[in-house]
Length: 132
Image 1 (cartoon, rainbow, N blue to C red):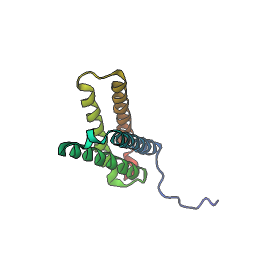
Image 2: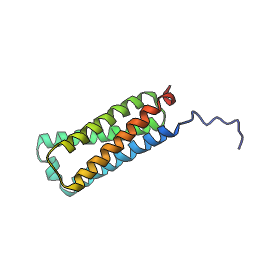
Image 3: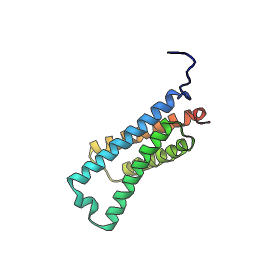
Image 4: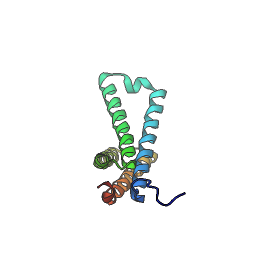
Protein backbone atom coordinates (compact mmCIF):
# COMPACT_ATOMS: atom_id res chain seq x y z
CA UNK A 1 0.00 0.00 0.00
CA UNK A 2 1.15 3.47 -0.78
CA UNK A 3 1.62 6.09 1.93
CA UNK A 4 0.15 8.85 -0.23
CA UNK A 5 -3.42 7.52 -0.08
CA UNK A 6 -5.90 9.80 1.64
CA UNK A 7 -8.18 7.79 3.92
CA UNK A 8 -10.19 10.84 5.01
CA UNK A 9 -10.21 12.61 8.34
CA UNK A 10 -8.70 10.82 11.30
CA UNK A 11 -11.13 9.98 14.05
CA UNK A 12 -9.77 10.39 17.60
CA UNK A 13 -10.24 7.42 19.95
CA UNK A 14 -12.67 9.40 22.11
CA UNK A 15 -15.02 9.81 19.13
CA UNK A 16 -14.80 6.11 18.31
CA UNK A 17 -15.55 5.10 21.88
CA UNK A 18 -18.37 7.62 22.27
CA UNK A 19 -20.04 6.62 19.02
CA UNK A 20 -19.67 2.91 19.66
CA UNK A 21 -20.99 3.13 23.24
CA UNK A 22 -23.94 5.27 22.21
CA UNK A 23 -24.70 2.88 19.35
CA UNK A 24 -24.56 -0.17 21.62
CA UNK A 25 -26.67 1.48 24.34
CA UNK A 26 -29.31 2.41 21.77
CA UNK A 27 -29.38 -1.03 20.16
CA UNK A 28 -29.58 -2.78 23.53
CA UNK A 29 -32.46 -0.60 24.69
CA UNK A 30 -34.27 -1.04 21.37
CA UNK A 31 -33.84 -4.79 21.75
CA UNK A 32 -35.25 -4.73 25.27
CA UNK A 33 -38.29 -2.70 24.20
CA UNK A 34 -38.87 -4.93 21.17
CA UNK A 35 -38.64 -8.06 23.34
CA UNK A 36 -41.07 -6.59 25.85
CA UNK A 37 -43.45 -5.72 23.02
CA UNK A 38 -43.27 -9.29 21.73
CA UNK A 39 -43.87 -10.79 25.17
CA UNK A 40 -46.76 -8.57 26.26
CA UNK A 41 -47.94 -6.20 23.55
CA UNK A 42 -51.25 -5.56 25.32
CA UNK A 43 -49.47 -3.83 28.20
CA UNK A 44 -47.63 -1.46 25.87
CA UNK A 45 -50.34 -0.85 23.29
CA UNK A 46 -53.55 -1.02 25.37
CA UNK A 47 -54.59 2.64 25.28
CA UNK A 48 -53.83 5.71 23.24
CA UNK A 49 -51.48 7.09 25.89
CA UNK A 50 -49.59 3.79 26.03
CA UNK A 51 -49.11 3.81 22.26
CA UNK A 52 -47.88 7.42 22.34
CA UNK A 53 -45.34 6.67 25.08
CA UNK A 54 -44.14 3.47 23.40
CA UNK A 55 -43.82 5.23 20.04
CA UNK A 56 -41.96 8.15 21.62
CA UNK A 57 -39.49 5.84 23.35
CA UNK A 58 -38.86 3.89 20.14
CA UNK A 59 -38.39 7.14 18.20
CA UNK A 60 -35.95 8.51 20.79
CA UNK A 61 -33.92 5.30 20.81
CA UNK A 62 -33.89 5.20 17.00
CA UNK A 63 -32.67 8.80 16.93
CA UNK A 64 -29.98 7.84 19.44
CA UNK A 65 -28.71 5.10 17.13
CA UNK A 66 -28.76 7.53 14.19
CA UNK A 67 -26.84 10.10 16.25
CA UNK A 68 -24.25 7.46 17.11
CA UNK A 69 -23.75 6.75 13.41
CA UNK A 70 -23.47 10.50 12.79
CA UNK A 71 -20.80 10.77 15.48
CA UNK A 72 -18.86 7.86 14.02
CA UNK A 73 -19.04 9.46 10.55
CA UNK A 74 -17.86 12.81 12.01
CA UNK A 75 -20.98 14.66 10.87
CA UNK A 76 -20.70 18.05 12.52
CA UNK A 77 -24.25 18.65 13.83
CA UNK A 78 -24.72 15.12 15.14
CA UNK A 79 -22.21 15.61 17.94
CA UNK A 80 -24.48 18.22 19.51
CA UNK A 81 -27.57 16.11 18.93
CA UNK A 82 -25.80 13.11 20.49
CA UNK A 83 -24.86 15.24 23.50
CA UNK A 84 -28.49 16.34 23.96
CA UNK A 85 -29.70 12.74 23.71
CA UNK A 86 -27.04 11.67 26.19
CA UNK A 87 -28.15 14.35 28.66
CA UNK A 88 -31.75 13.16 28.18
CA UNK A 89 -30.60 9.59 28.87
CA UNK A 90 -28.84 10.67 32.08
CA UNK A 91 -31.93 12.58 33.21
CA UNK A 92 -34.16 9.59 32.46
CA UNK A 93 -31.96 7.22 34.43
CA UNK A 94 -31.81 9.70 37.33
CA UNK A 95 -35.61 9.94 37.31
CA UNK A 96 -35.84 6.14 37.33
CA UNK A 97 -33.49 5.96 40.31
CA UNK A 98 -35.27 8.78 42.20
CA UNK A 99 -38.59 6.93 42.25
CA UNK A 100 -39.70 4.35 44.78
CA UNK A 101 -37.30 1.51 45.52
CA UNK A 102 -37.18 -1.24 42.93
CA UNK A 103 -35.43 -4.56 43.06
CA UNK A 104 -31.64 -4.37 43.26
CA UNK A 105 -31.32 -5.63 39.68
CA UNK A 106 -33.42 -2.75 38.31
CA UNK A 107 -31.43 -0.23 40.35
CA UNK A 108 -28.14 -1.73 39.11
CA UNK A 109 -29.28 -1.64 35.46
CA UNK A 110 -30.43 2.00 35.76
CA UNK A 111 -27.19 3.00 37.50
CA UNK A 112 -25.12 1.22 34.83
CA UNK A 113 -27.03 2.91 32.00
CA UNK A 114 -26.65 6.30 33.69
CA UNK A 115 -22.91 5.69 34.09
CA UNK A 116 -22.53 4.68 30.45
CA UNK A 117 -24.41 7.79 29.32
CA UNK A 118 -22.12 9.91 31.51
CA UNK A 119 -19.03 8.28 29.98
CA UNK A 120 -20.38 8.97 26.47
CA UNK A 121 -21.04 12.61 27.40
CA UNK A 122 -17.48 13.07 28.71
CA UNK A 123 -16.01 11.42 25.59
CA UNK A 124 -18.13 13.62 23.31
CA UNK A 125 -17.05 16.73 25.22
CA UNK A 126 -13.39 15.74 24.82
CA UNK A 127 -13.76 15.21 21.06
CA UNK A 128 -14.70 18.74 20.09
CA UNK A 129 -11.67 19.31 17.86
CA UNK A 130 -12.56 16.37 15.60
CA UNK A 131 -15.80 18.02 14.45
CA UNK A 132 -14.42 21.35 13.19
